[in-house]
Length: 123
Image (cartoon, rainbow, N blue to C red):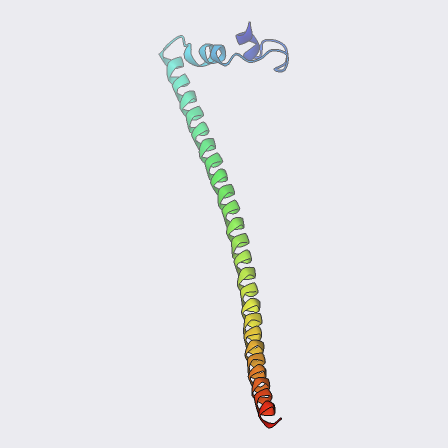
């Protein structure tokens, strides 16, 4: 039977699937006397504690993984923000340079217009 196989009674684990319900019933719920019941309770308590500790470790590992991923994303965002700030400074410098050039051309145009007006008066 599958419970015999699950209890190690025959064949490999790959050959016969373990029937967990039968295994639990055969190995964990049946007892002959109060002493066996107490021993089983102690074993079950150990299993519950082990499973709880394992679950806690898994949750802590997952939390650490999520925290590492979030930290990586934050660092990535900070680097991108720094890059954008540097680009903004360069663009501001270009704008300032272009404004200066514009003002210089405006002055040159005004001077040229004034010279043209003066030349027309004397021609």
